[in-house]
Length: 223
Picture 1 (cartoon, rainbow, N blue to C red):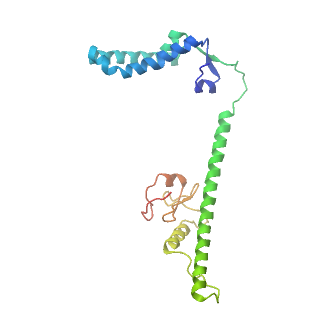
Picture 2 (cartoon, rainbow, N blue to C red; picture 1 turned 180 degrees about the vertical axis):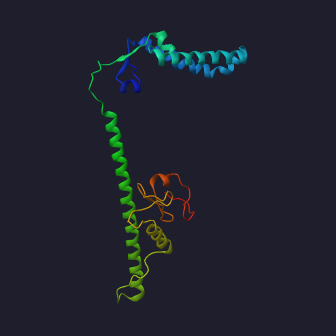
Picture 3 (cartoon, helix red, strand yellow; picture 1 turned 90 degrees about the vertical axis):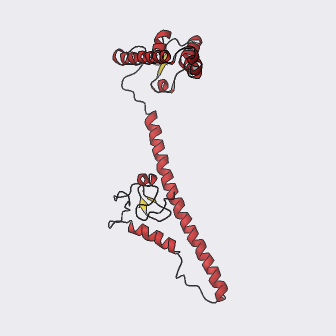
């Protein structure tokens, strides 16, 4: 009853944590701080500001000293827990040699999901680029057919716009002699390479995420 997320991860709970104790614990931890902040301006009318600051400073000093005492001697974590006699105990007796892999499994699942998204986005960009090129070829074919009467097959001499030619040229310039993509920001082998849509230059994923303009051509970074 009333375990915090951190206590659940550590397999802890409060000893003799009844409903009455829960209400008192909530009131002393949350309601007192809430009303103190809400009515601080009202209290200034009746209590001088210097005296109120001294009271607040003394309260914080007591909490700080008690925190150092807890770190050194152990026992109750806060003065409120000491007043309510709240002691954290294990939900089940600890057993030596057991390991909890839940957090590690969640981390591995998230890493795999992130890598899958990176691969999926790369495939999506490639398919989208091929689809646009195919649609442009179909358009050029239809225009050539209408102009030539369909008597001969059109020769695709120019299929890319000047922007696209510069786009692919920038990508080729980012390839090292060993065939590995290089980041234009850190000039190292690109880790999780990302291409800037505006100019085609290659970045590491981290270098790309913190850039606002391209390092090579000063174009705006388009994500």
